[in-house]
Image (cartoon, rainbow, N blue to C red):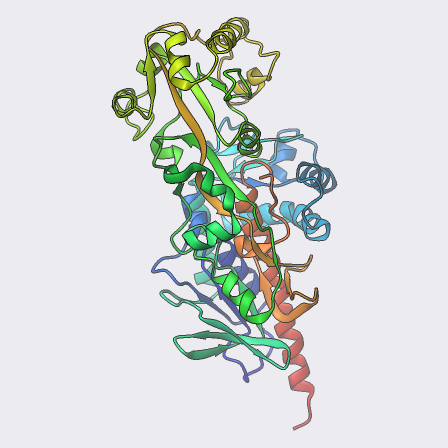
Length: 488
């Protein structure tokens, strides 16, 4: 039998945003016995989570254990903090690492399928190497992000969480120093606890310029793959109510070719036999470096690098992709976006790099990958993790091609409402605003400058959503019991 509720409020918990974070929060709160209203500004649920691979980074899970992977939340915490130079908030990060395991088990219990098998990519269910990791923590669910959303939504419906689509929250209801609900269409919907899970700010160009200026490096080549509802509504709430923001200047920008227009699922992938060189014409990186670190490497090269490949590599690109297609590369060469020349020396002149540097770098590349061991940048290890033979074909058949690689694919932003280890939102004075919680990209303090492995943002959304829902329901229950104890 459920606990009695305070009828002075419309609901016990209101959740703003029905992406992965909001769905997790609403399900978690309802499981704790709360009456929950889930508000979504768009006409469908899912947000950016539904558009993702659904990959989750997590430690000490049953999936890892089944595959003999030894891990712990403390080990994940140390790795996470070190990769981010300890510039994120230790308390919330520790909570995130500690709760990641139980969140994966919770999802499995709800019906998400993550088989205990080795996966070689973010699109093959199982456990995968998901970036810069000390142990494998990338959990790939069946049916990707769409599958995660469907499982959570079925749980939401089963728990009788009310869902209102096309309902964009305009403001918070704040009285006597605490949150008491939200305002939408000029009307108040009341609850003693509110979870902000409205997504990031990638879909608002003005906010991107303010809070992620590095996105400007790509210029006109920049494209956004986040959900259209990621309009940064939490920023307005912060400015109106004196709430702290954390993570300014941070976000995930994937490195893509200048001519690329879509997420790689649609765009395809560059040829394996390619070499990335900096403005000095020298090879400067592992061409398959994880996106946790590749944008930073480009930043050290002035913001972008050249990717060089030969005509055999171009012609061998698999058909059916929108951008990395043999004919499309020729089309871009005719426009001058892809540079094309009969010899490496002529290509170097077009690239404006020293010809001897480029030819020496290509010769070195060919020698290393003929042996299958990249002693310079250890790319053979990145290739092996993907199941790719590191014995690559030489870059030797003209015409040769070069295209600029830029941090041009904007996936998510990390500027969110600063939260504590209980997901409570902090004011600019450092004190928690009673009744207000945040999760997903709308929450700041955990997602840092370095994106820790594939699955960082999805795990962040689901872990914080689950914790925020639980915390919000607990607050509502306490206030309800106090109300009932008051004399009539």
